[in-house]
Length: 268
Image 1 (cartoon, rainbow, N blue to C red):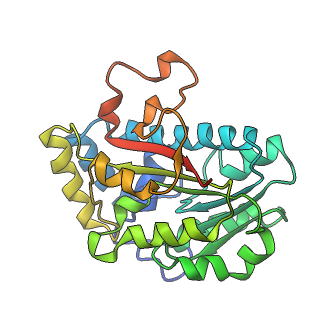
Image 2 (tube, rainbow, N blue to C red):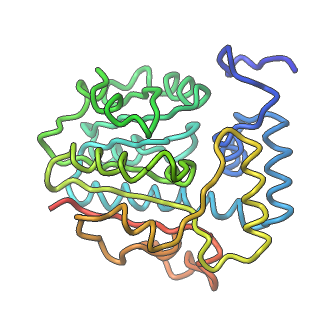
């Protein structure tokens, strides 16, 4: 296929990308036919998967609003994905124009688009780095320019850790990031789970193995361990629609069908 102008050189157009599949489910335009085909296959097995991804995005927005109201002015968003409506910097800087946001993503498509969007924003930037290499993130010149690690920072890891296999020991990366930020900082996590999921959802999960970012489902108990040493913000680790919904209607009758937990903890 002809390479579109928004796709950086070196992108494999014949292999689906997890971030582009996510973009498609959110109604974005930065995806290829191969991504849409995989998304449709997943939807055929698990019709609620699109709503799960949208629920993740909604929680991100609620989380950033909560954190700005709590006085946070610095955000480290790891696994930020391809930009879409309601980015962290849009929400945070709408409330505080001086808020600083550093996006991190391993996908060059997501990075290229973020660079284009942020080129005129001195208080926000994107770097290409791997969640599993937190030292590179923390020492990056843009991190040093934007973030003051002596003051509270919100570390956002929403929809990322479930792409990391157990053998890569994601808990070590979380702990390194948690240790690097000042007291008063927050850690927000969203993670897919197998808890209470019907067989067809677990079957759909297997299709993620066709991308470079296979999903690794974990239990609520396993996910809660990432918050060790932190004080959980109410209501704790819950299914996504249950985390500080804007209205009762946002919860729905079966919030567990989102298939993911979300929570926020504070470093005291």
